[in-house]
Amino acid sequence: MSENQDQTHAQGGLSKVPLSATPLKRKDFTSDQEVRWCPGCGDYAILSAVQGLLPELGIARENTVVISGIGCSSRFPYYLNSYGMHSIHGRALTIATGLAITRPDLAIMVITGDGDALSIGGNHLIHALRRNVNITILLFNNRIYGLTKGQFSPTSEVGKITKSSPAGSLDTPVNAVSLALGAEATFVARSIDADRAHLTSVLRAAFEHRGSSLVEIYQNCPIFNDGAWDALTAPDSEGVIRLEAGQPVLASGGRLGVVQASDGHLELAPVSEVGLEKVIVHDPTATDPTRAFALSRLTDSGLMRRSPIGIFRKVDRPCYDDLSREQIATAQGRVSPDLHGKTSQLQALLAGDDTWAVS
Image (cartoon, rainbow, N blue to C red; front, side, top):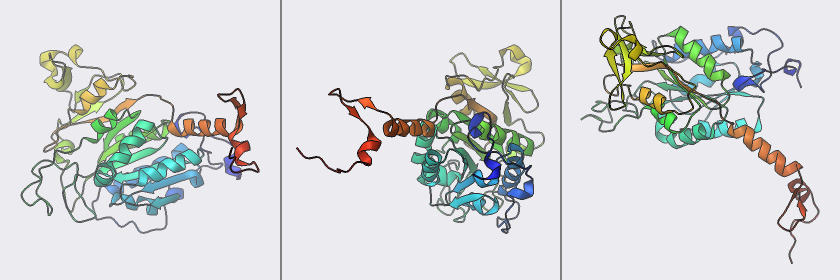
């Protein structure tokens, strides 16, 4: 055990991860590799936010692991000075799950994109979230396949004209937040690369949550899908719907608020007409994800003129990796009666002289 492993976080997702014995700085998490993304790519802002946040969390650098799949975002492990793996397309979550089960002393981050996570890796994403594996998933969403030069992705809008859809995409886009909530994820959030303060606060909450944390990050691709989020980031835009715990759910500027319609669905309405008391108050800790799911459906799947931003859900549930380790420990180290009143012990069987007993 190294000298920086004599203390651990007291609570949260990092509760079993050793703290650094000495204060860390941003440069400690900055590798010597040249960052090779296109000029203006939103990935730069996300990398900068993560490199700035990790020292504040106090995680020992050697206990930080970054696993990625395939895509522009998946170059992330090269640029963060920690352990990591640039793995295979859509399979980063499977590798991260195995690592989380075997190494509770690691803070595990998965970097993925809308194609990597929601297309070939979609099945793995669903099961990692429903199992509640203790990993933090950052899903970069630029609504396009950037690495392979501009094909439509699972989040591209209907009618998107690309090299692989010259007459327009026919696919209904995936709402990553709705998918995560439907999979019973315990922490689901969304942020945007252009809002550094908001992104950092959401990432901090995701890292500190024990269980599967999914953060969808709207990220601009200046080469193949430039301006995908302009309607949200324009100075006078009312497109961003802010989700803050204990606060009324309002769009930017405060003119519009989210209210419940007579048929139960949520919609935006002028606050001056309905009254502030009619605007719903956000509670991400609600056990029932119904309201969080309804909020996620306010996302515009077309030209993206509006979208909720913030933490949709944050609840506690036992982690798959914790439960798995407990189950293994029980099987290996405890004696329990079998159906015939005898005792059985897996470890004794594995270490015994006889491999097979034939009667």
